[in-house]
Image (cartoon, rainbow, N blue to C red):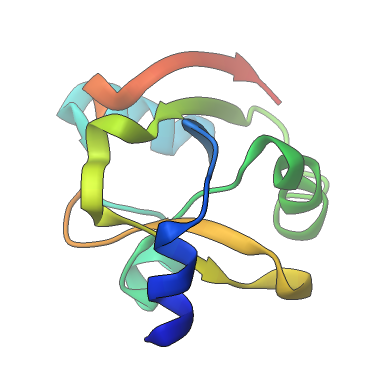
Length: 112
């Protein structure tokens, strides 16, 4: 928990990214919120990536997949539900706890 507290007081980007399959994106658009991919649901939070982490996340978890959508997320709209935690390679990754990702927080999308 001390690492989480330290991570919370550091400067972090204002935006992060969520990679979605075409089916996940379609459901997100229909529902207006995204409760998470199977890995998110299993881990208890929604995995996001900073701009610097995005390509590594694509390569590690989505290699060979087509039709992916990258949603740029305004982290300010998510407030204290965003926790920066140590993950791959010791880097701090943004994780969304306690709620679904609302469509209102998506500021931009593009194909992967």
